[in-house]
Length: 365
Image (cartoon, rainbow, N blue to C red; front, side):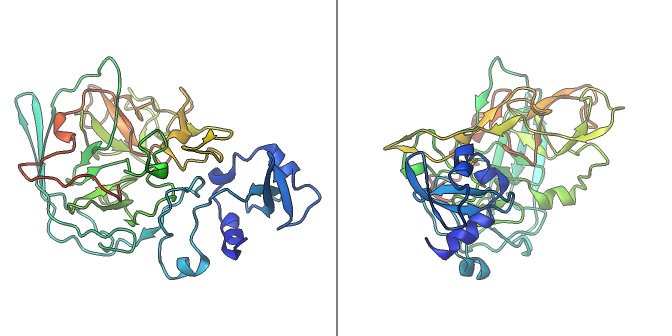
């Protein structure tokens, strides 16, 4: 067992190994750290997790995505591994200390039934250095033109967000929750969660990085944008952006009673949770334990949080005092919604943007 493996286990986030069964603890009773153990007929070793005193038996074949201590000290992300099955839920980030390459430009107009959004894709906040060791692309000016319904309606059924932008921020930077990374490269259900830490994406402090075509985009909470917009626990979130189906996007905070502007301000919570137990095993199945490494590790539990399966709710907001359906970015998964409550605009499908051909979707999500 490599020395860094022991270090890594001590730094695992609670969600990462929180679903090891009780038998994993029982297998190490009376043993010491580093002792050999057996769990489910698999050989392993006993380790002490930082969140508990009990030793747990971790199978030797469990592929934990971690960087060596020296690599972390040197600021390098862990190597890309498409066989990773457990990860810590933390993505390596580069400091957002670089000024934008030019001014952010965005224009929003109403044209008939459409809200038309034109932007150059440049943020209003500082970004990380691109290229970097986790992302080889350089930020470039984009030519976005999106049409979304000006008066959106809830559809009969929700539509999953695939490999496309969920929406666009009011600074013209897209929200893109998904990563084009799959276990063993098979485009099945075992797609890696972008920010799980299993695949290093070279994101900056805004949980954003760059596509091969130079498009800067958010995979998680756009911290720089939220700071610029003064998002605080003391007031309802301001408008953050527009989803592809035309409904507004907010972040973190809203009214406790969504339809009453007189109610107190509370933090919005997702209704998703990590599944418990082991994943299926097989030639194309990852095995291991559900921990958030893959999108399929999560399940929706109605009523577990304040938001529905699309991370939204019906609300009255300062911008929509008469009421609307709205999405919220959350601290918990999915952070950026993974389905549309309305009908998404075709403009958000992968393809040309204002006549500029977009390269095919490749690595780095």
